[in-house]
Length: 262
Image 1 (cartoon, rainbow, N blue to C red):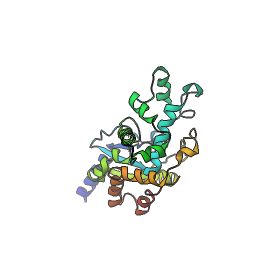
Image 2: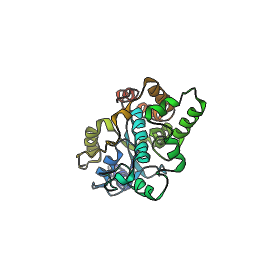
Image 3: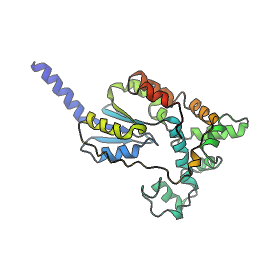
Image 4: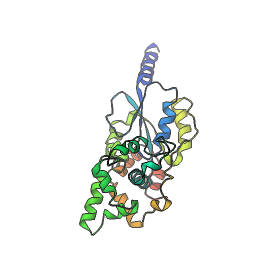
């Protein structure tokens, strides 16, 4: 009927003019996704990174990663930035440096992130050391580890739970979430996203890997893994549980995120 056609037209028009927003959770392959979306035919596009001032007129794309692996990557990201001699960097761009602008700016400062964050990072020699400190009998070491994990500067604290408000975002914005992808299935999910958006996305992967950090820095002991799962239980895993409850991720994905794949 005429009325039905008008309603469908209005709904379609509203969708067209709504902003497509990508929630770029740190260390989930978000630079790759943003690159594809930024260079697509999408007109109304924005990205949230280190920011969650979400608006009402937005449709959301979210990318995830195993929280344990994401933690290790987040630690090594900061470790690399703080412990690398900037004089050894050929040029400050994404092809030669993981944190171009911050490291370039650090040439004129005594820190890369903040004085406090950098000082706390230097207390721990690797991701395993920090994770184990969270249950250490050394009360001062445990305090320092927890303080670092709660700092707002970087990706250790700003994980899945931070961006998705421990699941609250999922419940409140459920009808506006149009796609949830994962780093673990990057290529396949980019193809699915292309179909959802009905546009062609360049599927040439440009994943950045922290090749500057030794592979031994990825090691986590069983205790460290348990501590990280416990640490993110009410944040990252609570948000993942809410995504699972609403069918936005599968049980297989959720279960795999409780296992560390070094």
